[in-house]
Length: 344
DNA sequence: CAATCGTGGTT
DNA sequence: TAACCAAGATT
Image: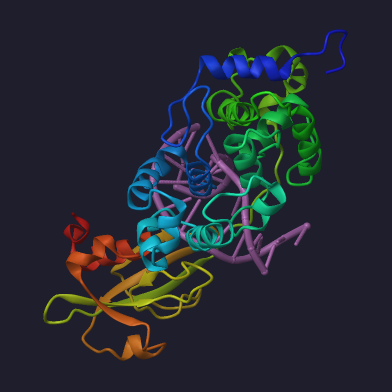
């Protein structure tokens, strides 16, 4: 970007954004400033999660809890139940904790100071920047996976992620201007989502093509470089289905933190790599391991009582659809009770 | 810094 | 089809 005439990155990208504006439930109309509550809620949901998946959850949350105060007053179990299926359940726990802090310490008004935003649970560097720019129109960068990719290509950054993060951060900060900060950060992400995509750079469609260093060097499609991820081990276990005479099924609550923290589960043996199991199985892939569970019906409660008795609860099967059950446990229950148990 | 933490879709 | 990816945060 040191040619005779500096490439107008900002203007070119915003022009493209205006012509390709996407309508999303949480996005304000042109010229309007968004509601910080909706921006925050959507940004938390969108962490490592696709737009298509988030839409229905966002609408459900807004309907159930129209303001941050409503959410603050909710029971965590209800928030977890509404979040069920969306994954990364620490987000739901932090969401609720953050709502309470905003409600109690900031009178229900999200602070527009980035240092204060960063202190709130679940708000890290990306989400802080996104809220600052989108909700408060402040010139703070919001660097997500899209921005990593777009800027790695535009500046031909060949150092692999995450080592290249500091350079990407410097580049992104340098691009921010006071004018239309929220639109600009969303435009950069939209460009990565719609044009400069992971497998295909689509440079012929890009408003930045004339100044893209990756394109000029013919390496845009190869960037950003990343280090390979470790292979996932396979763990196994047995899930015990216990049905009561009235049609209730025995569940238990998982510990408040860690994997599926605070969510409900069918009582299980521990999940180990060396368990031997039967053949009535369901499979599920988590971020860092693959799981195979054998689903066994039993009448003896001893299996469940090996661990914490206090957390066990009986749930009527017609209530399962609105319970805080993660996807793996829905698979287990469908395997044991049939697909109709989650029909509304 | 590297590991942990879900799920569904795409190639 | 196995790998990769998605508007990351936390420890």
